[in-house]
Length: 469
Ligand SMILES: [Zn+2]
Image (cartoon, rainbow, N blue to C red; front, side, top):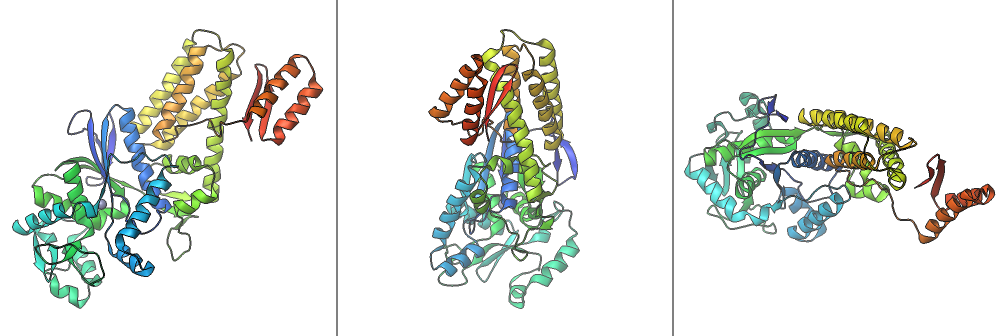
């Protein structure tokens, strides 16, 4: 039984999918006008872990996410660089794919782009007008927020307060176009000749931001979807507006479980361009050779909590991952000299940790507690690796279990830098022979040679083990 915290009800609810065994899930993707920052990566990783855990539990997950590829920021960037909007959008959409690959974020089942669904958006907007939920004003189309019963409840916002805030943000010109300051644009009239636009029943223009996600979720998933995810900053206005538009359009509930991930702080400060601590994944990957450490840090903080990204927290994650890799490696070495059969006691200890892991993940994806169970398994691996006699089935079971559970966090490979050269292999073999012949002077010499080439050798009662420095 999986429990999910639903932002709409502010409660952990028992998860039940609409279709048994299947999940329709939509997660808001980035606006492609720049490299993604660590906050975008956190959101992608948080929902990748949610997806992976549902898959671990046997669900088939249909995961749809978008690229916002038409937007004020893209138009602005295109002007600055003297290229068209699609050049900017394509460049950063490709960069997103490149940057999320080393972080082991699974590709979406469908990665939709706003500009690919313009005809669907126009039909959707026209329907809102026909139903009296939207109106045209000087080529813009606005949604009548107050007409939608329960507008604002998703983010637990007070309608009057929202209206005051909205009025404060508008200029006089906008005030004359809107019936009510709280109304929001679903279609925007073209402002300048050089900007990207499409013909519509309301003149030339482009879609507002919120409408694209409503349209894509319906087009690629269904009128009612199981899960909608995104950063907590999207609850209002973005998701509030998506919910109003979608439910006004279909007359059905839009989302059963609204899930929102927490912020990323950098050195305990909110990340912002003005503070100069804006961290793109593109830059991080250039300077950091072990992306799995970043993945572990972002995946194993509970998704609703803030993450503090700093060199300290990154180092802690690296130490944690090294510990896991070492335990895994120590036990892997025993595959070569294990006896047949299995150890029933150890297998029941392993099953106990699997159970703890699942209980933690079932409880609204409590990844820190789930990680603690993985560490217990690593301790078992280290202890068992030191046994005089080990049983091959149990060694394999423990190794497989560690990998299986870590796979939920997106850590799917533990053999760090597994390639060694033939020369190193020969030296390792030569050292085993030297020790067997009690030629310790030679074996020490070879150890030194190996160490200089980056291979650290240690001797255990079960023989020689090595790892890369
Ligand atoms: Zn969205």
